[in-house]
Length: 294
Image 1 (spheres, rainbow, N blue to C red):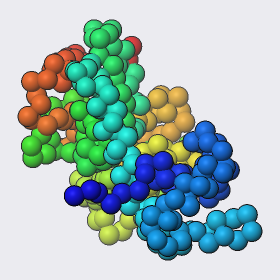
Image 2: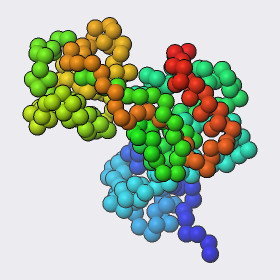
Image 3: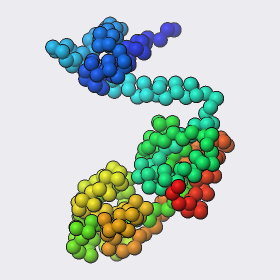
């Protein structure tokens, strides 16, 4: 049975207009004329058998149906594009390695060392994507994911490449007491127990702490603590240079090594792939011998 689908051109024009809110900008992005974009929008409305936009002077106001359709359409177009690129590169899949990185760890530890891998394997092209979870890396088509945790992800083989040592830090201009409870404690969404674990190890009840703003990534939290918004529990790796150069202080005690750490993980059923083996061997060597940045 023939599928009931509009043309790809109509879908692309609709999605671009919805993103930009203007036919002119959608036309510029798609390298089409405004009339061509408008015609494709009309074709889609004819196919759908009801309007997707309300015309108000020169503006197009999306209907509720258009808003809902766009929400579902955009990820489908992203998937179609990604799989098309995969099809176009068929047969060369062992030459392109898509590496999913945790943004802050990647920029501080892995990316500065990647020159060593590309020197050893000039035939493998790296494609870098970022994310925070395994699901995000799956959706991005990552061959290898850089993850934080205990190394236990069902269906995946994982190698620990770096421990995490955490230490509370404060801006020099904000430091006025050796007691951590005198400060607001900045929070990280991916480390909900970091503060309670530290305080309990020091024999201090976590119920006494003053919770400050919550952040989704360490890069923003580093800037927040530099700006004096509070004290942050940070991986030592991320603030090492700030501490050495005096931009931050760690006056509350030595760094503590966490049970969890940083891993590279890949689906167990692709472990024999040449590019997976090549990167795994290299990164394990880099971590075991603590190879410095290139």
